[in-house]
Length: 449
Image 1 (cartoon, rainbow, N blue to C red):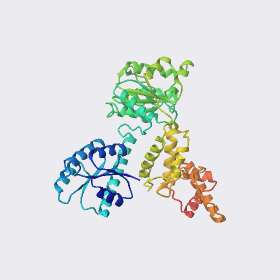
Image 2: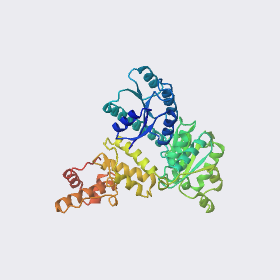
Image 3: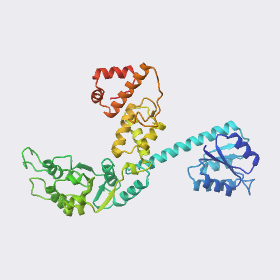
Image 4: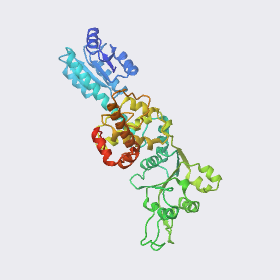
């Protein structure tokens, strides 16, 4: 039950309000000192405050002082001021000082219940908005409230204003590019480009030209002079993902760029000065690679001026639920689905799973669940956790019903596993696409391609 603090020196009024407001966990206080102690101890969202408190019951000075002190301690508290029938002036003073609303005696239980209910609703909405802003880390985009993420966010904000080269270490899917972009957004380069390049995804023969650019005629097919990613990031940040996969012969050229802040395009003879902040990332052990002579030692020390370790999702406490809710809202908006949250078994399944694929796996699960869900809440089954022990399905002995349930469940599982691809779904089920569409229509399944 929500905590409600009633501040009034009249024992009769206290009893009347407590009886009228039985839906709340009522805490009583009769003067300013006990009221402040109750605010600190119970942290109520809503407070009713009689302005005529002892030792100055005839005036509102003590009540207004209590109001000011409450809002100083807990500025988001909704304080409803209760005044005498002829005391409208002091009620308006209280509103000007930050009170949420006022109510004039005599007490009408129906009216005061409505006022207090609205105050609790508003307090809850405002708290959710504050939580979302804090959770999303909207300024730099690192989502989460766990201790490890708070440390990471603090380090990002400390190094961002400097030009230091950072190395991000973490498992695949932990959010290394998001962290690199956070370094960019927290720096004075945030209005300049953020350029990301994955060293593992580009063939060795193309990576050099992709990074450094090339002059016209440098090689067959070079019909015009083209800037590389480094030049494109001028004034901003260059993110080199999977730097451990960079070819050994290209590492020397990258080292020279990092040291001299200048480059030469392929086929060029002119040095070009560049002002670029570099952030690197890998999920490999670069120290071991240095020992094995597959990664240059001098480059290793140059790119790891400071190292940031990004924790896996399994070590981030309740962040998994926060991230899931964040992604759910994002995809519900994107796919125009009326999905509001997760069911109890959905939340339990999210907490129980180990998430070996980290945030990328969670993101894909939530995306497919938003597409799959037929109700306002995403269930464990929608998420693809078909064998989760918290999921309870009613046993039905009617063979037709059992077959329909089994086919519906199989279609939804295949659709989730194929991440919404209808061709892959039909392949998994061993049926043709027309048959699949026929079954979807037959069982009234909600499927958005």
